[in-house]
Amino acid sequence: GSRLRSCSFKNIKIVLSDFSGVILNKNRFTNVHFKKCVFYAAIFRDCRFKNCTFEKCIFINTNTESLNHSILDCSKKYNFYEMKIPDDLKDQLTEYRNIPILQKNRLLHLKGGRINTATLFILLSKISKYKLLNGLKKIYIEEQSKVKILSTFKLLEEIKNLVDTNTAFKQNNGALPHPIERLDSLMSKLPRFHNKHIEKRKYSNSLLAKSISSKVRFSNKTFFNVNLR
Image (cartoon, rainbow, N blue to C red; front, side):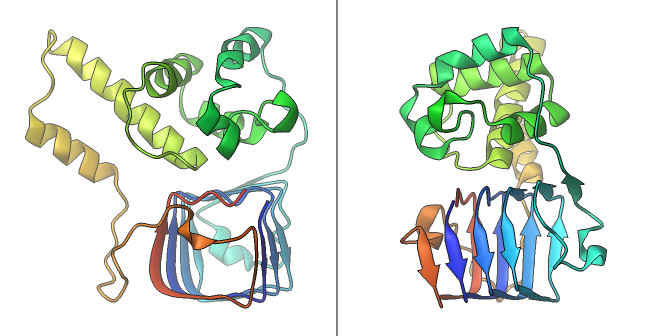
C-alpha cells in the first residue's frame, strides 16, 4: 500500500476510494468527508481529525482507535482474518486472475494469485453470487463497461448498473429503457456534491504521484474512485 506522512487534507471529499494497506502517518484531516471508502488493513498513526465524517465506509482489520467513534456511526467495522470461499466460486474467479487491469489494481486477486477476501466479502454482502459473476463477465470478459474501475465500491456500482440494465432489457422484451429514464436512474446513484466551493473535478490516480508522499497539502478538491493500495 501507499504511505502518506505528515500530509494535510482540508475541505476534501473522498468518494468510492480504496485505502487497502495504506499507512497514514501523522496526517491532518480537516473538514474531510469520506463516502463509500474501504479501509482494509490500513494503519492510522498519530493522525488528527477535525470535523470529519465517514459515510457508509467499511473498515476491515484496521485500527480505528484514533478516530472518534461518533463519526463512525454511519460506517461498518469488521475484524476477520479468514473467509471461507466455496470451491466453485474460487474456480469461477480463476479466469479473472490474469486480466491485466485486475492484476494491476488487485481488486479480485492479490500477489501470488490469492483471492482478495476483503473485496469479495464486501461484494457478497451487497449482491448475490450470481449477480457478481454475471457482472464480472460483462465488465471484463464481454467488455461492456468503459468505466475505469479502481475501487471496490466502484466495481460494485458498475456491476449493479450493468446487471440492472440487462434485467430491464429482458423485461421490456428486448427494448432498453427510455434514455431519459436510464439517465435519471444512473444520476440517482451518483454521489451529490452540494458545496459550491469544492472543485467539481474527478481524480483517479492523480492523488499520488508516488507511492510514498510526505508533507503534501490537498485542499478544496473531490477525489473519486481512487485506488491507493
